[in-house]
Structure formats: C-alpha cells, structure tokens
Image (cartoon, rainbow, N blue to C red; front, side, top):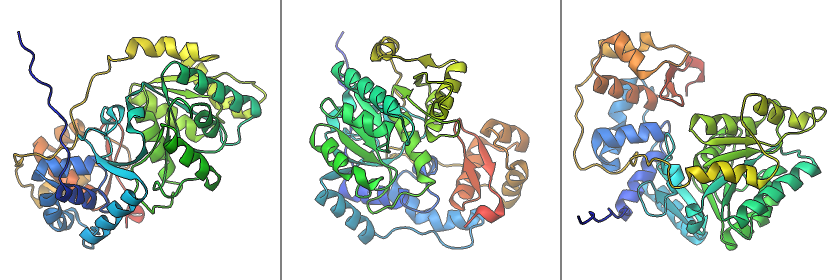
Length: 382
C-alpha cells in the first residue's frame, strides 16, 4: 500500500501576509478573535472589510484602529533589515510546539536559526534577583540539556533566564521577547541577543517591531515560553513570581513542569518549594528532566492549524439585538464556558460565536485559557 504524500506547508503571498499583519495588529484582535474572523469570512482581507460593521454591532463607540498597508510594509522592511522574518502559522518556519498550543499567535517575528525549533525544547525560568547558586544551577542544567540535543527556551530576563541562555549558547537557545525584536529587555542583554542569533539560536516575539515592552506584555511572553516547550523548569521563584505564571500556563497546556528545590530560609525558593508540594517533578540534575521528556518525544498530538486562509466561507445565522442582549445578561466578571452560555441562552453555537466575536472586537469581553469568557467592567474598556 502506497502512502499518501505529505502535504507541504504553504507560504502566504505578499498580499496575504500584509492582510494578516493588518488584522492581527488591529486593536482588540488577539489569536482567538483572529481565528474566528478567518473562519467566518474566509480570509484576512475579507475580515478587514467587515470589521467596522462588527464593531458597531458589538457596541463600540469608535471605528476600528486598523494599521494601513504602508505601516505594515514599513514593519516588513524593518524586519528584513534586521535579518528577521514575520512567519505565519501554517508556514514551514512556524515553530511546531507553538502551533500545538491553545490559541497560538497567528504571526511571530523570528531572528536567527529556525532549525533550533526542531530540537526538543525545554524551558528554564526563574528569579531575576537570583542567587549565585541558582544561576549556577540554571547554567549547568542548560549546558547538560544542550549536550543531550535539547533546545533551551527562556525569557531573556536578568538572573536565571540569562544564565540559562548563556549555558546553552553553543547548543541552541531561544529567547522569547516581551516587546519587538528590536526592543530587547533588559537593555544590558542586547549583546546576549546578538550572540543567541549568531550562534545557532533564535529570538522570537509576537509583538511588532518598535514595540516597547509594558508590564502587561510579560505574562503574554510567559505564555509563549510555556507554549514553545515540552517541559518547563523553575529554578528559583518567590511566592509572587512571573515564573509561577509560566509554570501554571505550562501545566494548563499539558506540558511537564519541574522545579529545583531550595532552602526554606531563602524567599527566592518559596515559589519552587510550593510547586514541589503541589506535585511537580523535583530536579537536581538534567537527567531528572530527560527521563521524563524522552517518553513524550515524537508522541505529542498535532493540533490542526488554527488560522489558515479558508477557501469556503462559513455562514452563521445573523444574530439579532435580542440575542446580543441575552448574551450580555448571561455574562459577568466570572469566566464561564461557551457551552454554559449556549445552554443558558438557547442560541445556536454559530450565533453565539458571532456575538462573542463582535463583543471581543469592541473590547467588552475577555477570553480565558480553556475556552472561558467573561464580561469586562465598563471602566476597563477603551
């Protein structure tokens, strides 16, 4: 029996890439909304035409802020001059692990060697104000994992992240940035960024070039770190730490979570020790990680591409104002599942999907991991 030939990933045309970037760079369009728009209208170009109508239906008070073609062409030229590429989901260079995560970013900027994304990825994260022992541990784990052929993923932050990147420079490391690739943070790691890209690693971000990272962008970066990795190791983390957010997100995505134990007297170990009490795998050497990762290698199920251009337009029954009001009445500040809203309102799934799309574009709802949705308070909307 002859096997069917594998389907080769398709690259976007220049026109499609510009339309994709205009859509994902539009205010209130995130990965979920982007996918819904593509599924609804068949292409990014078609979705852009309908955005004003959708926002008006969702109750927005002003027209959508859609970047012009000229703005996107400038971003593409900036990326080209920087030696980077803007890669869409479904294209050959889009990282496979990222494609498998829930709500993957439709477009990412990548600089460096894309082959590093084909190595088995393990994230190492931890405290910015790390101890010397913690940084030594992170560097040692990264070096040993690199010798075993693993790519080390981290967030370029001071402390543990920096040590992890330094330990795996020679074997392949990926730095996930919270801002644009031309706006690395902290500034003292600019040279490290150059070394990562020049020595077989890669830099990646879902944010546009020129984007200065804000506090709210770091949790988004942490989500990408978790999504890129098959397992995530926390070396040092206080009780309230971004690394614990990364660990939680990794667990929700079905990734393995590991932690290095620390002294009960050191507040920088309080978070990692708490993770261990919750049942994550204890790590004292790279072998502890490898023996849990090896059985999973090559066995991770592949998700279908979340946002590829569709050829057939999906048509949903047009919801009415009464339907929209029922949905608004059903939603509140506490996340609820889509199925719960369908049961409560009696709407068809396609009708609810359309209403949520309108509300999302108008900045009136928040999407949550696992498919939940909640209503944003009026004062938090633009």
